[in-house]
Structures are given as C-alpha cells and as structure tokens.
Length: 267
Image 1 (cartoon, helix red, strand yellow):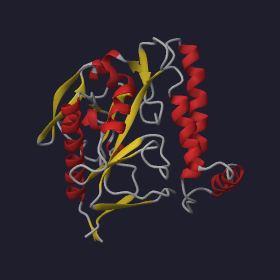
Image 2 (cartoon, helix red, strand yellow):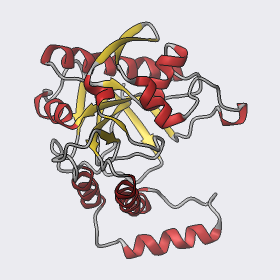
Image 3 (cartoon, rainbow, N blue to C red):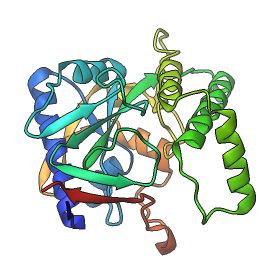
C-alpha cells in the first residue's frame, strides 16, 4: 500500500461527497453538510483549514432512503451501515472509497477506506427537562460503546487506564455491534412524535444542543472548495446551537484536528 498525502485524502473525500450528492439529487433525497464541514462551508467556503474529515446529515427518512437505495458500489464508492453489513459496528453509516485503506487506532472489525460520515437526524423531546433526561441516558449508552471501541492507550493516566480495563471486562459479554444497535434504536425513540426539534442522537458529541427540524426541511447550494454541495437552509440556527459565535475563529492552540488515522492507496 502507498501512503496518501493530506491533499490526496481531501480530494478523495470530496469525490465521495460528489458521488453521494449526485445520487441524492437524482433520487430526491435531502442531505446537508454538517458539523465542521458545514461550518467550514459557511466560514471558509471549504474545509476548516485544520480539519481533515467530511460529515453529512440526513433526516431519518432520507437516511433510510439513501441506505436502502444506494447500489452495492457506485464509481468506486460503497456505503457501510448496520442494515447493509452484518459485520458493521458503528451506529451510523460511512461512505468510503474502495480503492483506499485507513489504518485507525480504534477497535473495529471492519476496516474501510477513506470515508465521510453519514449521520441520521432524529426527533428529540421539545420539553427541556425531558430532553435532559433523554440526553443523559443517551450519553451513558455512548460512553459504554466508546469503552469497547477505544484501544488501551499508554499515554492515558494509570487510573483512567485501570478504569478503562475494568469497564471493558464488565462489558465483555456485549458486542460492539450490539451496543451500536442499541444506540440506533434509542436514537429513534421520539420519531413518532411531532416535536419540532431534532438532534444528531446517533453520535452527538461535538454538537451540543437540539436544533429545529425546520432548519433541514429545505437545503440550498453552498460553495465548498471548488465544488457546490447542499447545506441546510437554516444553517444559522444549527451552527449557533452547535458552536455559539461560529464566525469567530477559536484560539490558535485549539486549531487542531483530533483524528488518529493514516490513509493509504491500496495500489
């Protein structure tokens, strides 16, 4: 395998997004750039300079359409998800380039190539106290998942590593996939309500607060690098909920990415 440069990796990610964009446009599926990708599109017209990934959101009904209708492979791009792959261990989907490979530090049974994250968006309680109770339980389930997911790290303090090992032993009978399935089911708990609020329940660490579903009802064209992709029309509501004063740059010491992976070309 041949190591991939940072610019090559970004180019592959943008191509993956382009394939997903074209498929969604052709099949009437709404999606939006999300998280740091949407912030980058609004603030930088492309990647946040120190960022190295791409995220997209789809309302749950559009997410299910994409997962069920996307072919086995399209222009070297595949989608992996719980319903498409019995060995998949994430609660959300990833679209990846079959010609590439990514070496990660996480414990996963399904190594894949350079990818973008594909997140479903679900309704959450409108009542604030009910949301807090729901979100607390959601975070507990996620913490159990990440105890199984993360590898032993010698850089971690000794007490944290001892706790990590003890928690792993306690969770030993429960598979990573089973925890992902629990997260996926719990995330959809309020989808049969008329709550106007939604959230990235499936993951939801970087984005802190619910935002209006109406923000994603319509999507608009947004420049991103040398391309144009879709962003939610209510991006201001979403970005304020996620980042506060999102047009302000963070302090220099926080302008770093937190991913630990190495991308390769297979050939």
